[in-house]
Image (cartoon, rainbow over all chains, first blue to last red; front, side, top):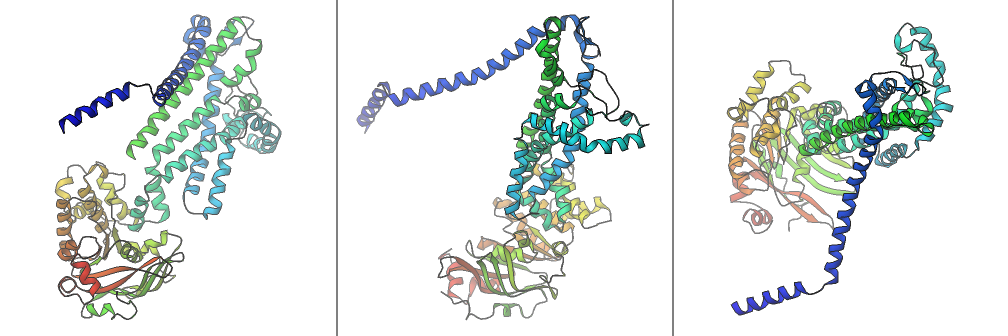
Length: 320
Length: 274
């Protein structure tokens, strides 16, 4: 028995020292995937480093004051990005105000058995198709269809409530409000798809438990199902916010690229990404450096939002 | 094998009792599939009734027809007549939400809501419009489920932080908080360790003073320990190859375990199959 065991282990050692093409493929595969994984990190670092180094002259000159100054004057080499930063944040927040109730509502509707599954599955697919529409198409649709469509209504709001700062200017054809509306449509699929997934992942046993206590469907939804899916829903909102902050094409086409900060939602405004898209072609020197500084601000903004989203979503998965 | 159509009417076993639920010729279908066939069975008040039998014999399906929880499955359909206090439960005028308030349920796996212990109990009371002292109700319900001493200092903690056995007793507590008349228990101890199981069984003896209990169990010792009446269900294959469940025998628990009238029951309780 003992002799046999020794003989056995010798062949084991011999066979593992022999050249084996399958094992070689294994090693190669391992190193290729390692290289790819490293490449991703390198690219991210490279982008960050480029932004920092090209933005450095602007950072050195304007420092933190760049974030609070409203002048953007290439002739006098004086740059500040407050209108763009506020425009980015305001347009995204208004977009969320529209998209969150609508998106969560649709997600609840599509996760309950209100519809026969023959209708429900295609409807969920259509919602996800919204995400496949290119942003330039949203921009064109906004300019040529949505703005003419809503303009009379906005004019009426201005006539009636013009004393209120948010509606204090006559609606322009390029304006903050229409941009936010288009952004809202663009981020809807993100909110709907992720919220629906998290609602569907709530254990059916919780639903049965609530029904078993004599709760109605509404009580079960509002008090048990939605709270159980809440961190997933919040995660979807954060991801949507990240997308709204960075959205370039539709915003650049619709917002009017005005460098003035206006309290009125019907006035033209600007966003960080729209500003960069409009100016990068002819920029040089300190202006180019300032655009990179602006890009850095946007990147930090979206990074913060995405990290928050990750934290919330992973917290949600722990509860599961 | 017993032919279900010629066996004696099993509901005769409970003739002398005060009946809360009657089951008359009930068959339950999922689409075209018949899960339960032709059950006659009466549930006496303030007793524990156990449903035993092999897997797939339709005991849980039958249990869920008493609080209309099968309504949640769109293809499920009930034929025959189920009455609760002489009201036909499947009358179109009957509100299933109201049925579930009167006939509470404890599930196979503990399913506390991801809320605090306190809120787990308050939820059911609130949706049923309870207007009294909530603190008092929470304490009374937890005491009723023999959970108060373990949880009185951590009512604000999540119900999910409790052990499995405690979670199941929390689920019992939230069920008795809505003061139902009947409590359905679908294998309530199958996910619990033996000590937790024993505590839940002890609890059942206390609870039957106030409630009528129907329990589905795979554990024959459990049925013999807790139940006053026991129904033995079996499954039989049809010509098409699918299986349907039916009630073989329903009688006082001692009779089922010591002097069963049917051979299938005898075989099952003596461990010869199942």
